[in-house]
Amino acid sequence: MNDFQPAVSDSRRFIDPETLVRIASLELVARTVVEGFISGLHRSPHLGFSVNFAEHRAYHPGDDIRKIDWNVYGRTGRFYVKEYEGETNTSLHILLDCSRSMSYGSKGITKLEYGQFLAASLGYFAFKQRDSIGYVSYDEDLLEYIPARGSTGHLNTVLHAIERAEAGRKTDFIKSLVKVSERLRRRGIVVVISDLYDEPAHVMNGLRHLAFRGHDVIVFQVLDHAELQFDFAAAAQFVDMETRAEMHVLPEYMRSQYRILLGKQIEENERECRKDRIDFSLIDTSTPLDSALFSYLVRREQLY
Image (cartoon, rainbow, N blue to C red; front, side):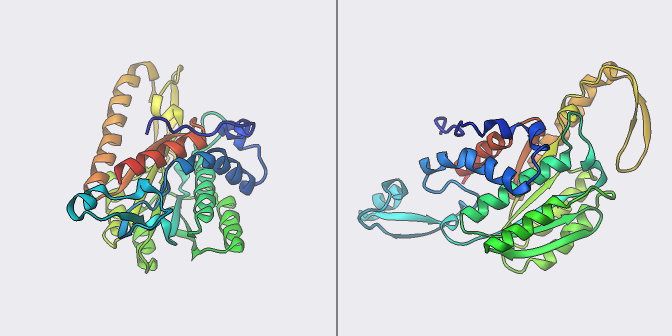
């Protein structure tokens, strides 16, 4: 799978996260990001979000031979091909964390803005796959809920809702995600875009409410580059954006320990998600969106 590479074109100039914030239209951002890598997806027969195996059917002349299940052939002597859920209509619900901590950004783009671009791109990509799209914004409660549908007009409704998202109050994963799980009657794919700034147990309990109802849950933890590296130079008063607690910090003395603690927390998030078959991906807001999405989709295909 190492030969997969995002397509390179003149649109690359739009993909840099700090440039994206200067594009007025969220639809243009989504279209530019998605079409920047989608030309390479034909290299795989089912590269997308819904790649769970669905069923076998008999091979017919003209079918892609890459879909043949050779294990079945070895047992039966007959050719059967695999069909995947991604080849049928699927519901994709995008959950965007709009809590106060998502408003942080060290280099021209906030985590919420990056999350908006990511949400819009995922929605646009799902629409290109003929999947239905739903959207939820939340902080300590649900802010906006749009049920999944698949029309062009509905895509525009979702994009406009994403565009008007604003960072507000603190996070409450359990309360918000329980309410979402109660509204989603039909099983589908649920994408959670968040910095996961809540008690780790609360984060996992909220995510499990979705997973235990049979949804295919994907988590994108979006963190600012400065949060990951803690490369601040001067002493400063740091303020917790959720609780408003203040702490005077000398970065050079805390940097190493901070990185160790953060690394352990991220590893724990990934480990706990894996236990419940929740797909976890960490994204640095300095990473070009097309590159981040393409890398994730290739990794998802390999896993499933």
